[in-house]
Length: 138
Image (tube, rainbow, N blue to C red; front, side, top):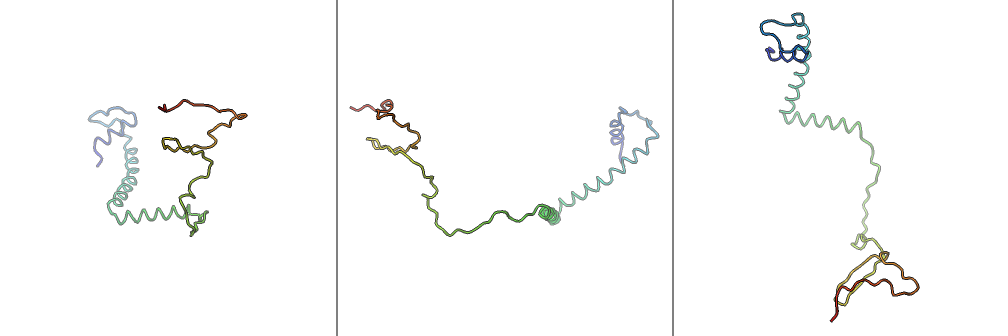
């Protein structure tokens, strides 16, 4: 039933090294081998059961449904937030955050909007900071 390769694997697992051909190195260990074979029975039965579930789509859906129902019963709680319908209108302007902007229009027709807090306040009426000129006028 099991064959020589299974016995060799058991002996190697127990540290016996390579078994000698022609005789059993542990004649009294036949009982241990039988007990190891008995433990394989339930595992093989479980494997057959799982393969049967995977091969039958209706049975697979039933197992999934049962397990999901179990999870639902374990973790289900009433909803903490309320979902209400608001019949009011929503405009694009409502989505834009209100903030102070400085809008600049150049002589060339370009428009730029910058947040007001990006500018420094001038001290005592001075001319302020002059940046480099970006275009020469002719």
